[in-house]
Amino acid sequence: MSKVVKQYNSSAKFLHWTSALLIVALFLLGLWMVDLTYYNQWYKIAPYWHKSIGLCLLALTLFRLIWKIITTAPPIEGKKWEIQSAKLAHAAIYLILFCIFISGYMISTADGRPIELFNWFLVPGFGSFFDNQEDIAGVIHFYLAVTLITLSTVHALAALKHHFINKDNTLNKMLRFK
Amino acid sequence: MKKLLLPATLVAAMLIPTFANAADYIIDTKGAHASINFKVSHLGYSFIQGRFNTFDGKFSFDPKNISASKVTVNVDTSSLDSNHAERDKHIKSGDFINASKFSTAKFVSTTASPKADGGLTISGDLTLHGVTKAITIDAHFIGEGKDPWGGYRAGFQGTTRLQLADFAIPVMGSSSYVDMELHVEGVRL
Image (cartoon, rainbow over all chains, first blue to last red; front, side):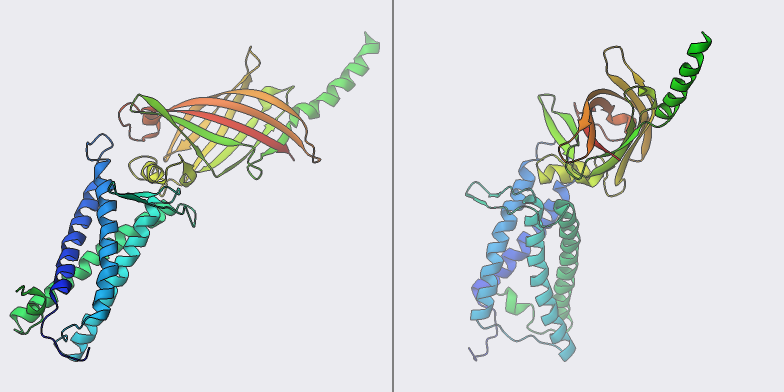
């Protein structure tokens, strides 16, 4: 475990970029679907996809965290404050992701209904833990999603800054596929 | 005639307080012996039934003087329950009743009048979605008397149709109106 690597391993890269793609897709799908009118043909199918893809991302993220723990990551480059900020931002992104998973789950299961994961199986619901759970969880879900997208943008801009200004390995260690 | 005048005056005098003081009742929401139900069209093919779980109210009622009856009810609009959390969230949102902005609906009666069929018509002002509008409830007195636990109760049922447009609630497809079904049991103070 103590060996120094220059690149993230291929699985870590795959997990990172798949997550990035799914998070952006879920964010846009979520924003779009809540404004659909009742008579829109996507009214039922869009939330079904949002929930199913969201649950897949949850499974992927759980695996990603385990993978992060058991594999070696290349060092973070930059000044001390940059390294600390990067670590803090990474931790915050994971934390916010899980809060979004939980709040999203709490919207759909507030009445005890299960969530359909595509047509594969049902994820059971446990009902409400407090009054107006579907409303409160909905508000939290929305603001956390906006926060996550903001933080991810900062994360991406920081990587670009390291790549083009500092000309270091920050972006390359996540980018190069063999 | 003179002999009758005194008893007649006395009887009349005894009746006055009764007329003036109809019995006051608190709606028994504590024991959930009252419910505010609504029924709204789904696509024009069937109806969805829902209710408001949290409300309180009081009424005055004297069977001998119906027109002295009064009723006031406050409803917590965020307590809407159609047995489907995602639908509740949608109905409570700004698309419909906007429960976070207009958290209370209120009905205050103005007049009550007996009807030929034994029922009563209760008119009053309903404030819903920030709009106050006069409505009429078609009500029926069901019964009154002692309960087994030392109290005294009276109960009614009522129906009314609300046009969503009257309260500036957006109309969607065939769902332009809501039929309200009210069951109210009060415990006398």
